[in-house]
Image 1 (spheres, one colour):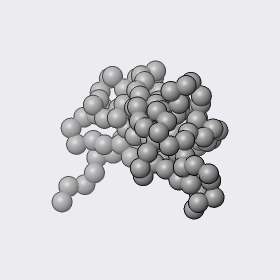
Image 2 (cartoon, helix red, strand yellow):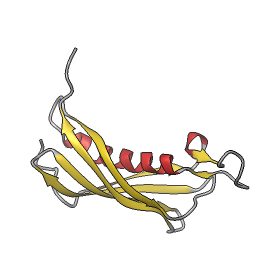
Image 3 (tube, one colour):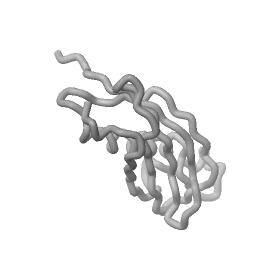
Length: 124
């Protein structure tokens, strides 16, 4: 593991709410919005992208815990940013992040925590 994996590093990923990120709750909403699973996926993506360049050869991270609240809607076409901040490294393999998604207008869409583990996948 790289020494660059230290508490406080941060990363972001910008995205537009469109396509597979949308839901309209089977037609029960008047407009399509960012789905909760898609929001969580963008949070996880920001976290793994943050640490991936710092891993040793052959290492990857896998997510195993997500605890988030989806606190506001983001309608189709919204521009958002997923943010991840590494809060803790335990035993050089357990990574704890704070995560959030914020809309371009500054509204918080989702907020919470995410944990990943550093693993070395088996080779065939």
